[in-house]
Length: 294
Image (tube, rainbow, N blue to C red; front, top):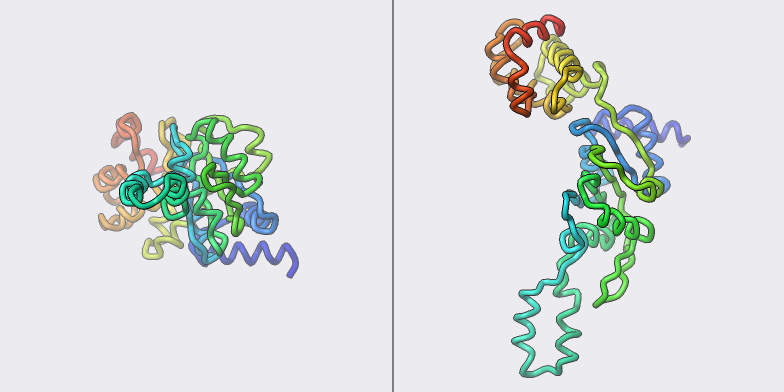
């Protein structure tokens, strides 16, 4: 099969699994698999970056191992940690009958090792999807440590030695761009910037995920959200918010936005996620936006 046909086939597999990807993203995911290189997905919050990792685990029929990054993330949380409570209990049980050097050898064994996401990912028999979510929220020190793991796919544990990868995971990193990532990390990864979907793509997503919604309402919802993203908001609604809002309107028996302004106002809690954004959307503003959407 030609590479072009393989990319189209991957697009179809993604669609069958519920994710609508344009050719550019499908081509990047194809190369990610063929080259076995980590993939950095960058873009605003809510554009579907995390969902890529989840969908890949489904179409590859493999485990999904997720590491959620945050400020202060350390090796104990991300890589491994010794089970100190079990070690202490073992020491008390063995100290009467075992030499000191044997005790130390026994308690620093695999039985007492707590495997965190990075270590879990490299010891799987079948390659998993390793989703390193929001890497930009982690400290630069952790990012530097991650470079070693992504370069050699091995982890050094002083008490045990070096653990090399049983299989190489499919690594997906996501970033919302809250801080600039290092050039070294970017060099090790393939890269794709995920934009907010255009009208046609978002309409297709809504109709695929919520097949019960009428074409009239789905078109109005997508047009409204597309216009809302152009407003001066602190938190622009992502695809998940579009789907939540559509589902809420269905629950409120809204068949067209212009038919029930009160229900539309009540349901905006699905779209607007800050006090300032909610305050900026009074009835007059929403009426004007509805008029533009129909």
